[in-house]
Image 1 (cartoon, rainbow, N blue to C red):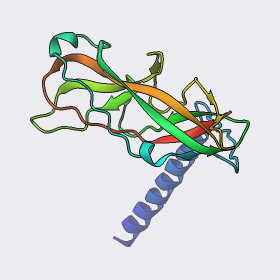
Image 2: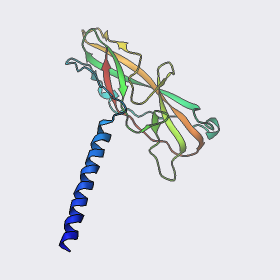
Image 3: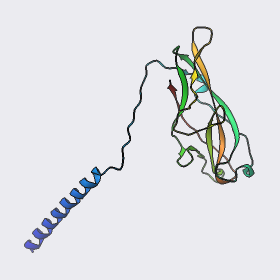
Image 4: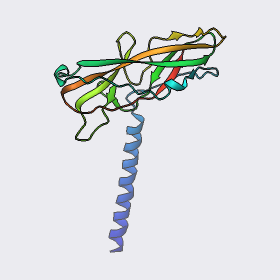
Length: 184
């Protein structure tokens, strides 16, 4: 009996060693690499108090306008006002990846109740209507200007609209995104 226990323990240790060696080889076999570069700056703009917690009321639209994936309807603009900026900067909003629908890079409908609309998300757009992916920075950096009192600021204009993920079903839509100011 003692001989069997020793043999079993030796076999288990050999198996564990083989597993660790295989894992070490697999762990080192990377498929690629992602490098992150960035820059932090000291002097930045401040988001005006009226722009910090915006509510954008999208219009009521018919599901007949959103029957196929990729269709959009009901666009509505919104502004983000920035103040107390340094003199010579350009500023834009970077929309964080909160609630991002991974395939469409739009904002998921968070109303998952029986009253929530189905197969619809909210797409962010630039001021000219060009789609703006969640998790990206606007390509339209705005140069700050003097408000006449030696203070610099800007108004950043964006929009939101319904985005069909397929044939939509009626109901409520509710979502949000956070934004961070980005500079050039």
